[in-house]
Image (cartoon, rainbow, N blue to C red; front, side, top):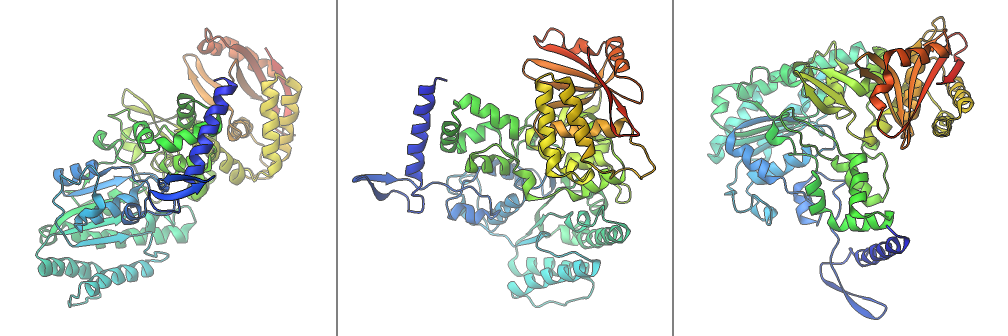
Length: 564
């Protein structure tokens, strides 16, 4: 794009922004600017602070129409389980279903379902575990009792109040049906929160998680009884963790798990087509500010926020909703999804299990293990997938390959791991940037000096004072250092001759690196040549640089580095 065209696009974007800046006024309200009368169209808002469907529709927020999936669910079944990572629209889905079954037709004007749904009114019971405290089994049980009792009071129903909470829940459902002569819809949001909030935090909290699980199993066990089944219209259960479903709803035979169904692969999250349709004006402004044409702009957004694949039977991928909206609102490519929460459970588990961090980018797992779960022995791989830190990249011979979905997740997760696993300081991040530049400049001594400085800035968090760090320790720190500042570093790459320790790929060159401990850098170069690790990069038009790095485990520094 020429400088002139960039300036023109920038000016056009600025003009649009000036018009939209008057969004506090109503639609088509007259405004005056420079003596001229302008018609201002109200700018739709990003739903960053609400999951209320009613609020989105009444207060001019952007709503991506997902109602055709809801219609399909309701038409084809009566009870569903669906999990997705946090901030992917699960609570908004629950809120939308609530308004559908309450018959609030006016909220759906202009949406796909508007002319296809009868909007008959049904009793709806919602359990939102974001709002139900569960710090102890006693609190969870008493708060479930409170929710049930409130529904009885709100519907002016006089009924027995047994101390047994599941029995009290059953009384509510039967009495609601009796009063309205209509079947009941049950919506359960963040069902797993009373369990996952207590995991990875010690034995006492583990006991709380187990007791909370048992309470939920008994409470929702009411829904499988035939007397209750006969009065239920529709049930929708959602949360982050697919694994805990088995232990809570194990006997609920009619609950259909659509988490990895191909028909619902793009149900939540935004597709590229949806972004182009619903955010067109915002994209025009954003691209203009960045000096990109639309194609370049979408490629960058895709690199940062796309890549989530949730079905083995479909290769459809979706963008992170919260990240995409923050990016367009703030006008910057940054890490937004991670700012909403720190993955404390994952970090604690990685530390406890002394997990080899570079392995995260190349995990292989079977489908059965993707939702395998034992509260006392949590597998990291399915947790990484279900939480959204990894996604499906490919499948071959029943083996699933997992990897980071996009740049935002890789960069942010690397930063968090460096901070929490290795107790890094801001100096470490500064040094990581210098290390990346040294690789770019092919500065062998600079690489050595900056790696040594990074090691010197990090204490021994994963090892006792008597232990010497091995190759995995050095490898992990270099990998995370380069990843957190955005360099394309990949580890443990499988070749026909074995596993390559690391490759760092730039626009016009690639480093092939082997690490050694208490040996020699020459041995690393020899291994690269003997194993034919460079074969994968031949013919790509890039300069190939062989690099052997030998660490001194006693001094925690580089003993030798060599380019070949």
